Length: 214
Image (cartoon, rainbow, N blue to C red; front, side, top):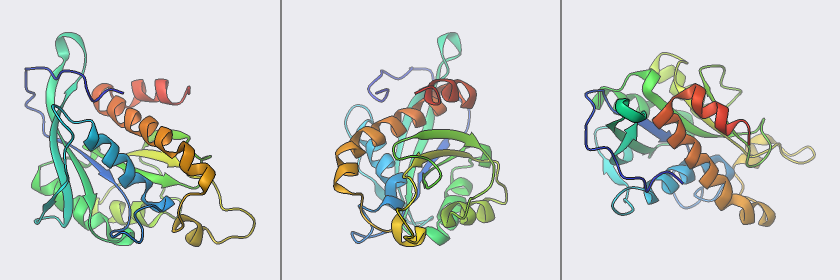
């Protein structure tokens, strides 16, 4: 894990990076596959220095956030940069509104927005990183693209696999992980959180080179 590393004392003048975990609000959905993005954000909040952070309401955006600082870059180029961890409080299909509001409030460019989400087209636990591309029927991504006005944001795709048999994918993503999956879920969340930190600290290409080889 990367979150316990000592941050650089030199702050960066760059605007914040916004990391968003997609999901649905409330205890009914908290443990479902569709909420794996928000589970990853909880893992990241646990890693903040000097102690784990608790999400608090950001009333201007209808989201819950943690504000922290991470060391970005390496060597002489390393510097602290503000990172906003966020979980929209809306339902998945309108989550783009809070994301856009946060980006405007904190002056974050869409290219510095990272969206963590569940991915049907990847096997369970597989993590992939990319910038842009289609939404693949994912309502949270569709709403984000519409609200930001671009597809050119970063995605951390957390594989949940395809539904068995003829089960409707919409029903599958709103169900809790199976007993077998729950045994592995903590490791998937740790891997996804590691991928987010690599992406923020070292950029897309360097992060892909590490994450996609696993």
